[in-house]
Image (cartoon, rainbow, N blue to C red; front, top):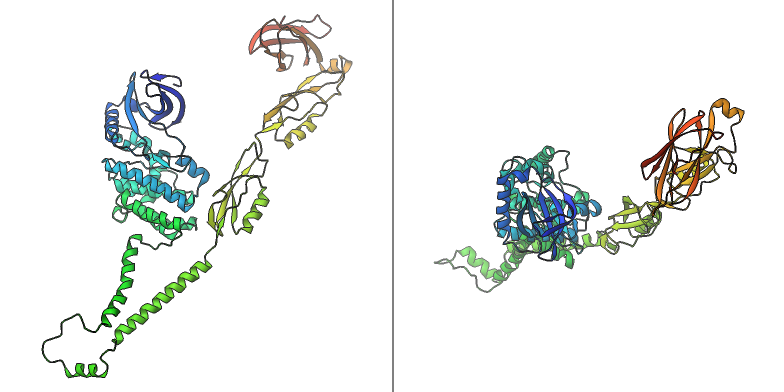
Length: 592
């Protein structure tokens, strides 16, 4: 459909992706003068009127949502019976790809992305819509790290289709809250669960509940304990780990009820990370615990006052009480002094513990710049900084030679704690290599030379007579020497049979020599000429090269038997066929 114009307006430029429901294109809106995203509904869903109408209702609900973190759906239109969604064109990479390539992310980056998702969900929920399918494929991340959430509320249309829900299950399963698998409808709390899964993936680079099938994943969501992100990434702060666990709580009553409540904790955490503060969990209880610590001081002040706040009992006081006041009227009660001393000891222990923890915790260090360094040197640099190296992937690079670092995660300059593991991507070198000159070498020598640069010799080795090249040595090769080709390319070679004629040994063995003379017709462009020979044993290609109009050339070949048939092709089409006798018979000028 590339190049088609839908509704005399949307020109399809290129395909972005295919999903079970949609084929997604980038398109040019000729009326609006901008690029948009077109999601063409695939068969058989396009033929289900109830599904399409329900999708139209979702689009109407989303029309009131205007938030930078939500992909705006502009319209649901139809072109010759082909319904399609029109929305803003996503700019950036999918979160799914970024997690595969770059995770784990630093706590600050992961928290910022989770905040962006919660802000987008808050706007969606305010419009009375539940997203219902919060997953990494539906999130686009821009170059500056901002997130944009797509396809909100589309789940509502699945109930109007016979197959749509089943088709989407595999993609949705890793992010579905347990209550949905049990039969409940999506809610703001289930959207929060999806954010919890994404936050876990951002911090660890893995799914909290991996599985091979949608069913096995759903069972783990329902029964397996909620894992700790700190178990896989020790750099995750305790508070952020607890936020993730709360978002992943199996019971909705133990989970954040909506995106706004999760957003509040995430923003407290973000401020703490930004200013180097230490948070305790639960975050919402910090203020309350602070006020209770002040309470004993208030009690002491009241106890030390000259007059008690409570009313004195009517009537004469007991003699024993009067005797105590006579001994020391200003004395502080012993129980109160014991409480004060206990509070002081607790504070001292807490301060001492805080000091000890800060003195013994790993020191912050910056990730050194490793790009362009050999692996051994990169490992040495990291060890000097108190960090460890893990090879993440091996990627081709036109800039970095093989076994040099092409990228790191986190990137150079990022601040981490000593002991943190840095993922390093290693270059496999250029995808292209220079073809060595094989002429004058034996086939075995050629194979050894080519193997050293990850090339090979084509299995179909041709032979030709040559008075100047020793028997068994290579006469020519395709591609030519010093050409740049991709690794693993097979090089075709022609091997000399020496200056042998039809001597007695050749005749006894049935080996004959042939010469075909070809004259190229006039024209404007070069032509690929291929010559096939069928002798007494087989059919094989004896010549395949480009030639210019008007060229004249000879093709020399050897075959079994005194006669052979030659077929001549120009650009893949046969133009002549001739049966020739050995060289002592009249020659053929096929192709003239």
